[in-house]
Amino acid sequence: MSNRSARKKGSILVFVLALIVFISVLSIRLMKETTQELRHVSQFHKRDDLRTYAYSALDLAVAVMNEYKMALQKLGNGQAWQRPLEFANLKEPSFLSGSDEENRVSGIRWKVELIDESGKIPLADVSDKNLQALFAQMVNDNEGGGLFDEDDGRPFLECLRDWEDEDDEDREDGAEDDFYEDLVPGYFTPGRKVTSFDEFEMIKGFGFSMDEPEESGLFFLENGLETPHFRNFKDSFSFYNEGAINPHTCSDFILRVLAGSDDSLYEDLVDKRSSDESRDRKEFFDQMSKLAGEMGFQLSQDNIIVRAVVTVERGKSMFQLHAVLSNQLQGSGASANRNANKTKLDKRSERNEKLKYPMRILALRENENLID
Image (cartoon, rainbow, N blue to C red; front, side, top):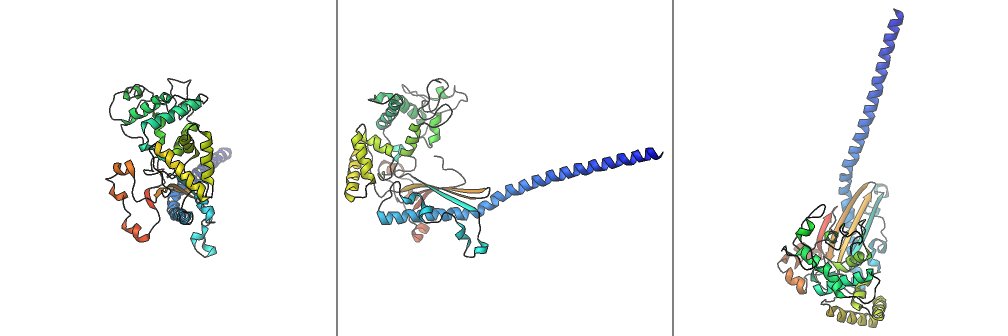
C-alpha cells in the first residue's frame, strides 16, 4: 500500500513539474511576442521624433545650396553643395537636442542625398527624331561602335509611342495591347506619358523578353539589372525639370550626345566646364547653347531643380523624406504652355513669400519614394 501511494505521489509530482515547464515555456513565448510588438509600435513612435531631424536636414541642404548660388552664381557637379552635411560640418545631429550635454539624444544618424535635375533634359519635350537617334546610338554601342543607322532606333521609339498613345493601332515596329496581353503575366498599355523610369522594363524592347531570350533588353538584362545605357539615360533625362537645362550640372553623357562623333569637341567641353576661368566658362556656355539649340533645347545658368532624399535613423527606426526643390517661379517654352493651368506653381504661397524661403518645394513625400 505504501508503494502504491509513493508511485501516486510521484506521478503527481511529475505532472506538476511538466505543468510548470509548460507554463514557463508559454510565458517566455508570450514575453517574446510582447517585446516584438512593443518594438514594432515604438518604430512609429520614434519616427515622429526623427521627422524633426529630417526637416532640419532638408533646411540645412537648402541653406548650403543658397549660399553656393549667392557666392559663385552657379551650382556645378563635384562641388561641396552636393555634400551639405560635410560642408556645414554637421555629420551628426545631436546638437539639435539642446545645449544641455546630459539631455542630448545620442545614436541618431542622418544622411542627405542631392540629385540634380536641372542639368537633365525634360523627357516630355524630347523630339521623336532625337530620341530615335539616341536609341540608335545605344544599339550601335552594343554592336561595337562605329557609324550607325538612325533607323536602328525606330523600333524602340515606336514601341514607346504605342505605349503612350490612347489608340490600339500598332505602328510598323511598335506594340499595342494585343502584344502585351499575351505575355505572362499579361497587361495593357496605359495610354499616357511615361511617368517613371521603372515603366521602361515593361515596354517591348527595353526590358528582357522571353520571346527573344538570346537578346537582352536595351535598358534591362534578364536578371533585372540595369544596363549602362539605362543608367546614362536616367542621369540625362528628368520627369521634374520642365524648363531650360543647367549646363554646369548636366552629365558627361549629355555632353557626349551633343558633341556627336567629334571627340575633340567633347573633351573641350569637359575641360572648359571644369575650368575656373571666366573666359572658359563663357565659351563653354556659348558652345553648349549652340549645340543645345540645334536639338531644340534651351540653357539657363540660373535654373536649379534638385531632388533631395533625407534619411534619419536611430537604432532600427528610420524616417525618410523625399523632396523636389526648385528656384523657378514658372516653367518656360513648351512646358510652360503645357502646364498653363497649374497656377499654383506660378507663384509662391503667402507663407513662402513671408519667410523668403530660397527654394520652392514642388513635391514632398514622407517614407514614400517619389518614384523615379
